[in-house]
Image 1 (cartoon, one colour):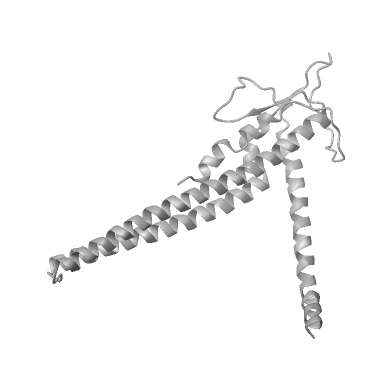
Image 2 (image 1 turned 135 degrees about the vertical axis):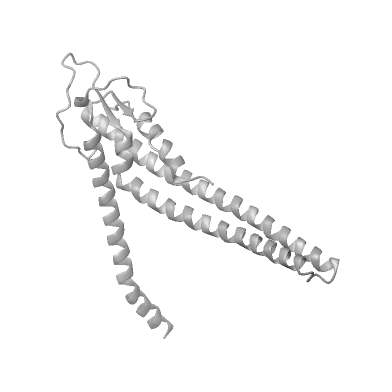
Length: 225
C-alpha cells in the first residue's frame, strides 16, 4: 500500500520546478519586498527554495500529511482485521483436525471453502483500499502542487525573478547556492498566510451556515402549516 513517504518524496518537486519562470502579469495580491541580491547588469534575477523546509513548514501540506496518515492507518487496521479472521479460522480448523472433530469430509471441505473465501475477501479489500488511498493521495498531491505552482508564478512575477530553483537534501542539481538567494522563509510564510486566510474564511462560512439552520427549519415548518 502506498504510504505518505511516497508523497513526501516528490510532492513539491514538479510544483516548484514548473513555476521557476517569471511572468509579466501583475495581480492584487502583493508580497512584501525582500533584500535578495539583484543582478546590477540587469540580467537574470535568480533565487531558490529549499523543498525540505517547504514540506516541513507549509501548513497545507502538514494538514494533508496528517489526514492521509490517519486514513492509511485506518485502512491498515481493516486489512489486519481481515487477516486475523483468516488466521483464526486456520487455527480453528487445525484444532478440529487434531481432535478429530470433523465428522465428515464435507464439513472439512466447507471450512476450506470458507477459508478460501476469507482469504480472497482480504486480498480484494487490500487492493480496493490501496487503490482508494493512492487515488486520494494523487488528488491531494495535485491540490498542493497547483497551489504552490500558482503562488510561485505570482511570486516570481511580482519580485521580478526569471528563475526560482528548487533545492533538496537528497536530489540536488545545484552544486552550490549562495544563501543570500534563499527565499524559502519568505515563501513558506506567504503560503501559510494564504492558507490560514482561506481556512478562516471557510470556517466562518461553515459557522454562518450552521447559524442559519434553525431559521431555515422554522421556515420549512411554517410552510407545512
